[in-house]
Image 1 (cartoon, rainbow, N blue to C red):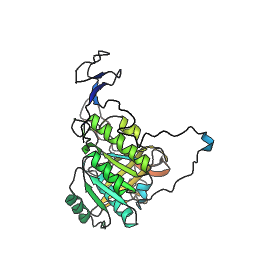
Image 2 (image 1 turned 45 degrees about the vertical axis):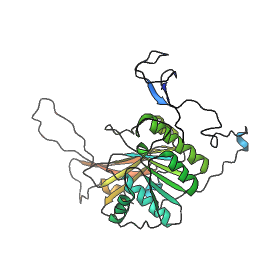
Image 3 (image 1 turned 60 degrees about the vertical axis):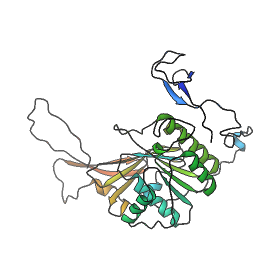
Image 4 (image 1 turned 180 degrees about the vertical axis):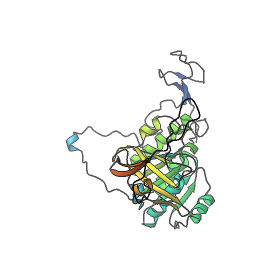
Length: 320
């Protein structure tokens, strides 16, 4: 495949340059040039995806609800929808949760494909064995080249595809390294186009920065249908999957999981993990009712006061 020559595009004025420069030659702004692709004619790269449809009256468009696919993991179903981007800290359990969900879906007869660029097929098999997962029907692929993955999608036509993670994919048409802004943007955009044109449900795993935000360009969150954050304290066995954006459901939905030796398990009664079992009322503790999405929760707040040995007393909040 012939490599398409890339250009550098100013993110401020849209001007272009044949090579990277610190200053945009058009608007003179500094550090705004990023690698991108030149505009191409409609009969080359995205011909199959860019076919225009005739204008229609909104009232004439069929808006029937399509049947939703279930992962058989109730807490995960609560927050899902469409092309999904799942972000979380390293080691929080993103790969484990998705592997469990795809194993359940493949066992129910769905055609599911797990594509990993961070682990080999043997490592994925070891994880499934470690958590005693019945995944003999699940297909696994270790691939980091976007064009090969798109070709396999077109051939296999899975109902559900997991890409773990989007930062490991690279496209041959770009010369930058995997994980760069240009690569992440291009790979995510092409996967989203392929998903919407074929009806495949795609779940992409995204890395997060030290501030807890999804790494990569902000456009990554805009092009997908659902953005989920996987949260949890390293000193606690409980994990929260929070829906930040969902074009097919309610936002701010919350799924609660407990990490066990057999993987992640849904918590049917989340209020129980926030409450201490007191036989009677105790000083410094109170229970309040809050709501996360469509789920009401009982949360206990405990206050502990101690003598300060510094001029300015501190207030600390800890979630347990």
